[in-house]
Every structure is written in C-alpha cells, then in structure tokens.
Image (cartoon, rainbow, N blue to C red; front, side, top):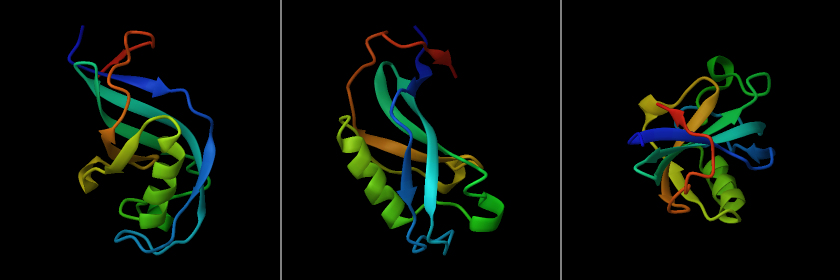
Length: 119
C-alpha cells in the first residue's frame, strides 16, 4: 500500500457562503460545491480538498476563499454530520478550483473500501 493516496468523498453537493471577511477576498457570496477529496497518509485522513464550481466562484475575480470565517464555519457544520472537523491549511495549498483544509478529526481509516488514487 502506498503511504499517500486520495479518495473522492461521496458526499452530497451543497452550497456554502462566504462572508467577505477573509484576508484574500471581500466577496460575500454563495459558493456551489461540486465534490470533496480526502488525502490519506498510511490510512489516516490528513487533508480535504473542497472543489467548487469555477463558473460560480472565479479566484481571479473573487479572490481566494481561504481564511473566510463563514465558509469554514458552514463547512464544519456540514461535515460534522459525517464525522469530520477541519481547519484551513496553508495559503500555498489553495487552488483555482478548490479550497484545501487540514483534517482535525475524521474517520480513522478508509479500510480499503474505496478506489485509491496514488498521489
């Protein structure tokens, strides 16, 4: 088994809001979330990528969602139903179509039940 791998997280799509009070954006807006992906290290969840619709949120126009407190709060509320708690990772890990988070709490292992994508 590889030490690092990612697994798409099969969660329903949702909409999360930004407050415009982050360091990188002053845009207050609803953001359509397309998908989620968990990165594992030796079967332990370490990070989460939250992919958004770039037609709805354009990083070049709207800025990075990174550090927006409302987005993080609503995502934690949504993910708590599935056993996850997250916090923003570092700025350099943010993408043009996703927000990157560190997983503080989550299911301990994937137990090999999902398709693994080598990183």
